[in-house]
Length: 290
Image 1 (tube, rainbow, N blue to C red):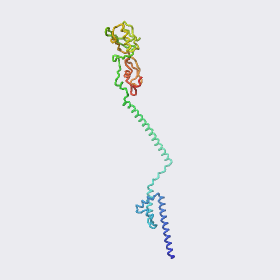
Image 2: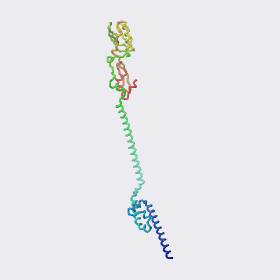
Image 3: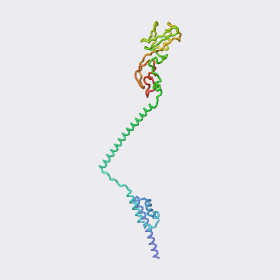
Image 4: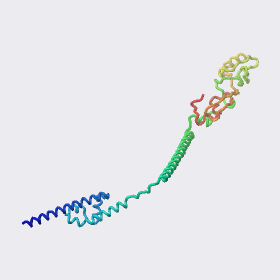
């Protein structure tokens, strides 16, 4: 009876020792792989390739698990070596002289890049300015300014003399203007007169007639009354015409094609004078003519 008890105690002790050995083994294995940077997943995958299941190892009894100890250790060594091979090699630590050279080189490279960026920016800004300038000038080529066609296509004629145009009734007579007086019917009369420096004309055997500053329409009525004293005619048998106008000097300034002083027959209007100046230029406006 005593012998049986000793055997049972011995078996129980061996079981406890083996259980402790297995627990210590597992703990040691996990401690090792953690130090070496190996994960449980990596270990499991490596063991699977050898036909060993890590999950089964955990459930095996101690005696059976010890049979795989050498293979597990071999797998751990292989994984450790693989980790070492994957680590980047440490570069040589530069000396103080090397560091200064590197810093100087870096500064030179940085300065070169800054200068290049500065020059590129200047070139790009110039390119943008040239582009805007070109587009600005092109816009004047493409867009026709309202009213310029009146002067460009010679829609308004420049009158060189009164023979090219009939003077309107509101034309103001002045020194140098030549007029003709015509009477037909019972009396016949046809003479030409030039307004003198004093502003008069002097018909033969009649008082002189002052015409300077008087409109052509009013002069016709006034002269009809004068001549009726000496000649017989009906109201529709008398006429006065401007046959040659005096010349005037005008100055044209501003946004025109040709600015300066012009000498023109006074029969011309402001628009006729603008025709002589070539009309407004590309940035001129016919809405602001003074």
